[in-house]
Image 1 (cartoon, rainbow, N blue to C red):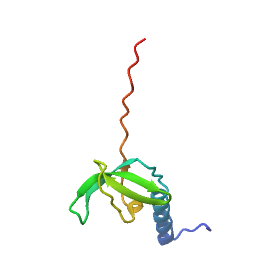
Image 2 (tube, helix red, strand yellow; image 1 turned 45 degrees about the vertical axis):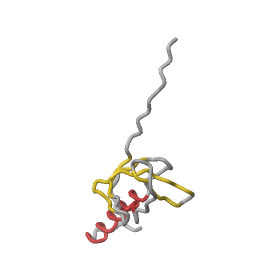
Image 3 (cartoon, rainbow, N blue to C red; image 1 turned 90 degrees about the horizontal axis):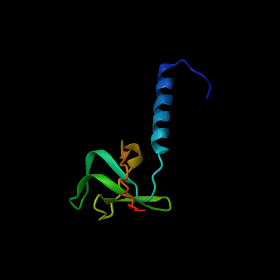
Length: 94
């Protein structure tokens, strides 16, 4: 794009860059994501933490206990963070 000094064009470009960064975040099967606000579903479940279930390009979610199957429409447009996985290492005595 050509350079511009027009404020509305610069604002539009900034918003596009923010959206591209949000959509560029990679999710992998088994990742645990946390949303800032609870998401409610038709079956009565409401939660902030979900586990990613990825089959090809399709992304669905399970609740934090690993049950259910949920679709979160346009989840890439929402604010979320990856919950670090706690790994317990085996103790080896020499």
